[in-house]
Image (tube, helix red, strand yellow):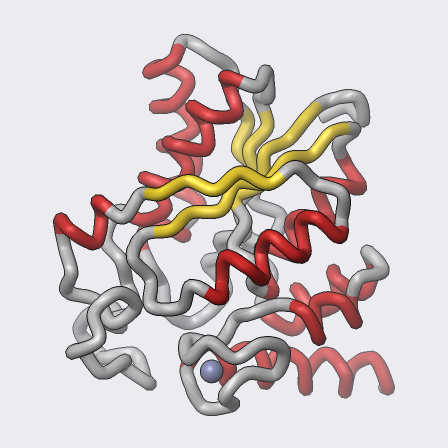
Length: 221
Ligand code: ZN
């Protein structure tokens, strides 16, 4: 990738995608962000994402893909009657798994990017952390990259700057990029919809908090 290229970042306003947004701003001349609504309970997510994108002077696109929650409402992010798994079941994915979500997001992001003359797509997926969602794995991303290129006869490049980083390493990257405080105080990672440090007990908050503590302790050392 050259500095004059353009990138589209899949952006939710959380810790990971916000770090990716600023990673993209460092590596690309032009950066745009795309955020998705899919029937998630917390509409605040979109406001947070839009605010961060505007603050970073990044054009913000919002796409409604709520069809996916109509196809399969059996996850706790869109369905109020399902209590969220606070730990990962031993034999399956936690019920925060939305089947097909990243495939849908990246496919729509690619179509939008193509229309804007953008080849580079950036996503904050990682296989280093606990949930093990299948569509966060490197194999899937590589496979989808090939599929998108074949589907649109194009040369997209999917970037996953967080793929091998655990949460403490994501904090370290934010710090390196000069946005540690912004990520810490403005992003929304919490499954219960609370900005910054969040509710403190949902799986996303616990992961974020443990990563932060680990990063701060290594920084001091
Ligand atoms: Zn939380």
